[in-house]
Length: 387
Ligand code: MG
Image (cartoon, rainbow, N blue to C red; front, side, top):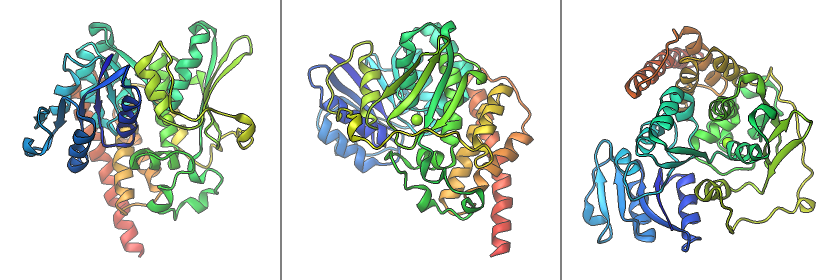
């Protein structure tokens, strides 16, 4: 019986993880849940799933929780849950950079982390590597592409890899001309064709920043250079990614798009167990198609490769500036293509440094956002003057 804690339990990954745990009462038990923004939903989850611990940075009355449930609250509550001895696996489904600190806490406690968050890997590479070697924890990827690659990699050695091929749904706009992207609204960008996800990642899928972050994430998780990683557009989201080997063999991982599958695999690995996911019948699917991404349409991918090659703090800046820009786009301050302009500006302004300690990384992230916000203010002003 595996005891599991779920960080970001009210988000898309968190809710699906609770579903996976509830569907496997023989194999899994819920130990703790943590969330920050949606306190009512968190309390409802505590009622429905009866974890032993609930963690929330925002203080609230412990009397609102069912009897016998322990409440951890205040700054560092998620980190505290992330490190508790009773849990065997910590599923980290927190959105954005905020996932890094709880991830570090889990790894320091030697946990298996089922990691759905990519921003933490992109920003904290050196620190995470050190935690993994010092404390014997492990990271099992939940991001569908990285889970696919992780599974395909079990068929060969590292020196036998020719390349990793990340598939991208392309989001709703990959066929549009660049000129038509300028006027895209948050509402249009939030309508993803194949995956139902949180706000940040859905915008990132529309801009392809999600794929850019995944290129960096894959390079870091599997310790490969930028040259070994390719992106191909695959609108049906059936092939979740592929690995080509030097003999010409390509292994692909396929299923219906359903995040419960990679979540479950990251928990049970190296075992596979039954799931409630619909089996794939290829004869009933639309034909699968694959397309080369147009490098002129989205600059997000090119910037990711450049940041990865430049190394040091560049990937962190790529991420931090994007997070700031996505927020500004969602609140209507900047336009869709301004997201990549903001990131490009911030990367160009950046003086790179090596980042080791968590405090250094948090500080560098804050600086990157401040720099990005200067550009965001300028763009906002220009837009106001135009209208
Ligand atoms: Mg993904």
